[in-house]
Image (spheres, rainbow over the protein chains, first blue to last red):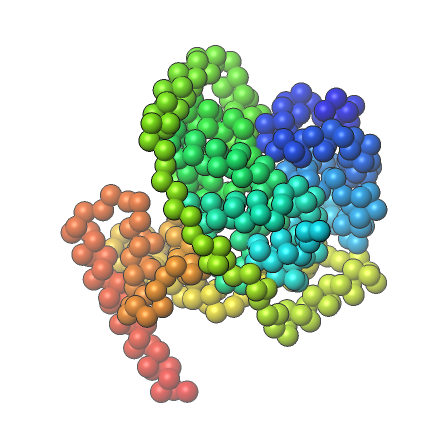
Length: 95
Length: 312
């Protein structure tokens, strides 16, 4: 999971991911480095400050095809979405 | 080829929830339908999930737990049950089953006599998060030593007495997706068209989501009625009219449970009594008093219904 370091994930956060992610998904996250990086990068560039928290909780979502992943977030008003995600990341489940 | 739709049906996922489930489809793809059936049987046997008509058995955000596979899930359940004796932690939140170090963290906290539950009786996030745990106890190497010793001893004990698992038949799961009534279907259409034509307000969509909509039915009315009654009873018995999370959770679990008999007289009274007293060390005298006030409350509610019926 070296690539997460390049995306500014701290060792603590990476340890959390390794501890809380099923091995099969961890292996996919390793294999699909490019796709996962793209999806994480999209959220970060969108301005979502707590993108790392969202990845820790909803890592399997980040294995979606990039265009499908973007579609989830693109239908909302950007500022409204960022503000609400900052208050409560659980709303990801309803997007 | 195994269809995702078949897996979602097995999970009792209504079709109007498929767009939400889609986000976590990768996790479902990692297990076969046979394995999914085995996992569901196990989770139902251990009452970690409860069968509910019209409600999905595992929330989409928790599909990642299923991706661990039967063997891992079985081991985590057995260890939590036999080593840490805290299986309720998984009942409270299924996703915690993914934490590889949860059991050792819990044992370490117990060993240090550190509170691992909130005053309301909910599990603290600390043992289930490596960041929170090391942040709090990172410098305490003793914790790790303690937990290894305890864990080793308990593991041996657990192997001597393997837990009895009585597997229920998979038929207990309602595989038929529930019928979508008109208002829900309409709201789903509204969301769909809104998402195509304009930007959607996040909260509006949450209110229109199938999970939240599912609460706006008879069950929710019953839940409200029972919590109101329970509040009045608690005021009569203890002089406080605030419900804590445990009692509220107990009421929700009981009103949404399919395991309750439907023909029992005074089912509401039994639910309120169980919700107030479950897991508490309550004297016989106190129980008699609670029952007395519940009877009075039920009588009052019945009289009100009669009055309202007459007025109508």
